[in-house]
Amino acid sequence: MKVLAEIGKTSSVITSLKSSDKRIGFVPTMGALHEGHLSLIRASRASNDVTVVSIFVNPTQFDKKEDFLKYPKSLDKDLELLKQAGCDLVFTPASKNLYPEDAVSATFDFGGIEKEMEGKFRDNHFNGVATIVKKLFEIVQPNNAYFGEKDFQQLQIIKNLTIQLGLPTEVHGCPIYREKDGLAMSSRNVRLTPLQRDAAPFVYKILKEVKIRFENHTVSETKDWVAQQFQTQPLLDLEYFEITDEDTLQSASSKNTNQKQRAFIAVFAGAIRLIDNMPL
Ligand code: PAF
Image 1 (cartoon, rainbow, N blue to C red):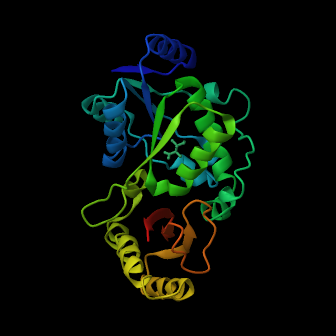
Image 2 (cartoon, rainbow, N blue to C red):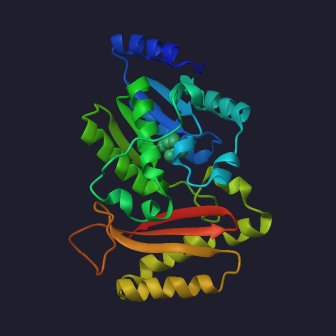
């Protein structure tokens, strides 16, 4: 497994792989890898000749400086996991090389999907994500790229980005990976205190119950019910619960049997933000 930090060297390795017709699968990450990331690597290895993983904690997608500074880092462990998982190339760029000027994001228009949910609560988040994904795709030139459905809105934004920019990369969403008790895997979970960690699977429990209740309750009844359930949870603060159409991500006012709908949730456990979602 090669580990490269320099953009120039990485580009020339990629160019030579492409010139020998190798199909490149790409898994962009911010490190602190877990089983969810490894499932993306397995998906990439199954359909590509070479799997590239990037590790870069992107400053422009954080709306809170503290969250950026406290983002977990475990490079040595990550490299060990990547080696075992059969990754071929790890790209670990430095911020000053990806953002040679100031670390600022470009501005994108995703037709409104960037303004819903995460877009409402995390200022400029998707401009930051799109800025870094565009830069990484330009360097890695992947045939296929793999993202977890836990960040379902991010996945839709990146699909839209590749269409908008006419990029040749096919973007694939992979199922959410969960702990045994249902908590969606996330690099941030290691920051939960033991008590918060015990409380956190409640988020998944609620989503599972929503899926059943939604069969015979309206959107607004379901939303009220979720809000009430979180009042019983002193360690979890509900930020939002939404039911939306999967494509537009616009808040649904009623059940739509012609359109796939999905429930989305964001919750704070202290300063740690947990998100999750489920198809209905
Ligand atoms: O999902 C993530 O880890 C990040 O948002 C990504 C896609 C690597 C961009 O920094």
